[in-house]
Image (cartoon, rainbow, N blue to C red; front, side, top):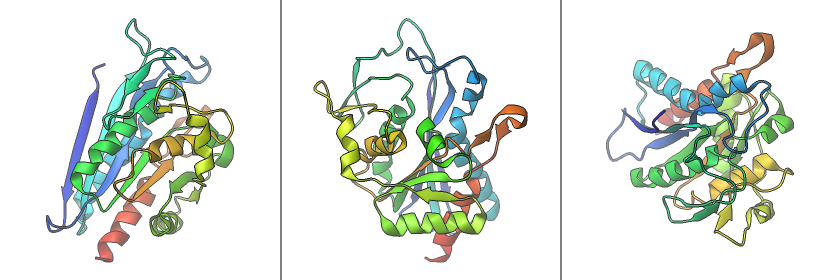
Length: 255
């Protein structure tokens, strides 16, 4: 299906007030591409747009609650499927901000659409940017389906999101962002590789995204373990809509 880049705007405050930007990963089906996933449970990969769905859910709630805050939603949306034109391992692509990326694994596609959406977010001169993505199986291994992974170099933003999760019973857990974790992303053929090794995979994915966030305050929520349930109870959970909405409502009250 053709790709889409969706921009949503909610204006609840003066135009002079910097917006909060929410960026949601919208991979509507993820086969893994050339680095194809195992067939078992691949049906669940329709949930790889859960980050995007959470942004849409937040905007639905904002329209009803009408808090005094400005919010922008960015949703890069596409499928990750095979074709004669599919990206191959070893290809080098150029991101929107000019950084070159060596594709070592085509199943690490979410960070490739997110990095350009993060660059696009700069034009809104945001107060903060929060991206939400079913990004890594490694985050599921680390935290299971209980807490979403939270990554941010900004202590105030991280604390606000943690508190919002506690209040809304939509819990997250702060993960590290030490610069040493970025070592595995180095490559001789581009500015950065799109994956590192298996160790610390959720963190190295966040370190990749962090390269594109130097111009604003940023947080990343990895919801791979919390966005849906599998097996007999297969379906979306709606997380982290509650966390994000609580964070926005609290931000509006503090203005």
